[in-house]
Length: 199
Image 1: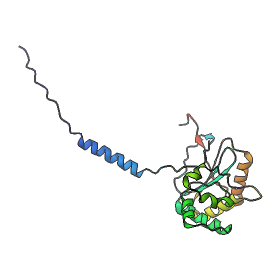
Image 2: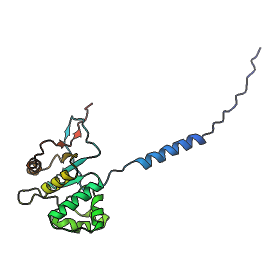
Image 3: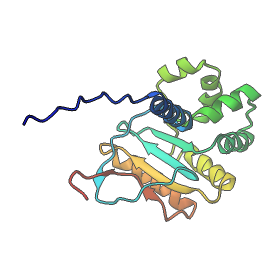
Image 4: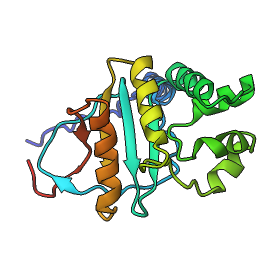
């Protein structure tokens, strides 16, 4: 005797709730993401097997690009504004509130003190085009020493990291490390990339 086939019914699934959850998650991730700020230089770091990562906060970063130009950065807008206040007092410079605010938005600076005021008076899109000459760190006018000293007094808990390009000049790195040692900073991190194949 032949079996009777039971007709299959299509199951209706309401996807409205699933779409709502998906869009809520997407909105949450977009709103809570902190975007990486624009950096005026690119640094091609050497590789190592170390997996240690710098913390997000409390970092003083000294960068050296392939041309040997030195850039300085400290995290946090209030810290950057405080460092600018202190260093401007030493050099006898006055900055407007707008210039201080604009400086606090910069992740790194690579201008000598003589050019910072003119640099900050430019519009943000113009600043991106300007090729910054780097902070002097030689024996005749070591402005990096002052930036570092004021950053350390502003945030004493900050870790100091040096991010040097793999093709940067040895003399420049020697001056940077000499500046650190002149302030009795003998513990600092060298930022490197992770070697391929390292687990």
